[in-house]
Image 1 (tube, rainbow, N blue to C red):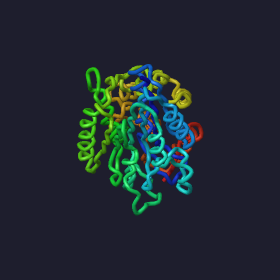
Image 2 (spheres, rainbow, N blue to C red; image 1 turned 120 degrees about the horizontal axis):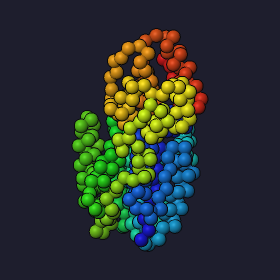
Image 3 (cartoon, one colour; image 1 turned 90 degrees about the vertical axis):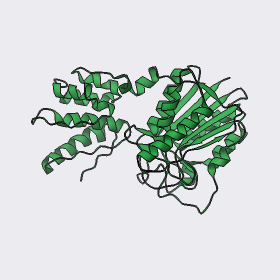
Image 4 (cartoon, one colour; image 1 turned 180 degrees about the horizontal axis):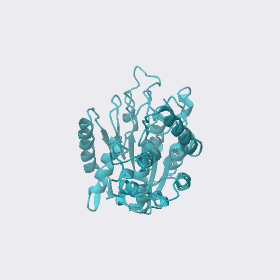
Length: 362
């Protein structure tokens, strides 16, 4: 039996009218890495952000599902925006041309129906209803009724797990950098000693989603449609080389004063080269403490009170750069207009021109 996985995550969009997400790319990367580390023989492909345009997603799905044999198990994972008219948004989706720049759920359903695979596991961490901050296109057309798109995916040999029902929103957890559903999956699929019966595990996943949603003050009810007789058994997922390369902070790495060490946290080499030019002596003791003891590059929070010119601003800059790499946003509050202008010019040059991030001033 061959195991085939296609992991798709989109949290940055070319259309500026589409709200960027925080963790959809990280969702796909995390599951791709864990499956690849645990099952070396898996045929796993990862598509995120710019690589996840509508043509590349469509081609990956068609090639995979049309070529799968009766001995194969296929995993399709998608994290990103859905639309009220039941479409999956790609990196190059345009609100002015949804018909040609999205993947209709019916297209996916038709591919599932024609697929010869022994079993299909489809996980959708998106939603088709709700407003901000739900994972749905807020300004796309809202139909009066199109039925339930999840039902169209179901059928013999298929297990469908959706973050929420078709008329309910789904959410992300900024504190974890993942969607609520994906975070529950990551925790559950790594918790077993040896193997995981997905049918049993999904009950745990669904309860975790409901509990976490309630904790942040929202309602999110995941949906499971299972038509795989006896369920589907997979090895318990274990992090390895791929996972720790993508999420080095999970290893509790420490750095020296050499700024190049910060590359262990996934920051781009182009950025580190800029920092090394700006800080010839490397990181000072205050900055080292912020990284190694207070784990600001692991997503932890920190209030720094220190004298002028002690390096406080760069601590915030490192934490913000890590957030940008993860698809999040960062806000700097500065005391004087002159300082605002100075930092705007600096950030525009480093993060805007060289790394392609949007830099705004207010």
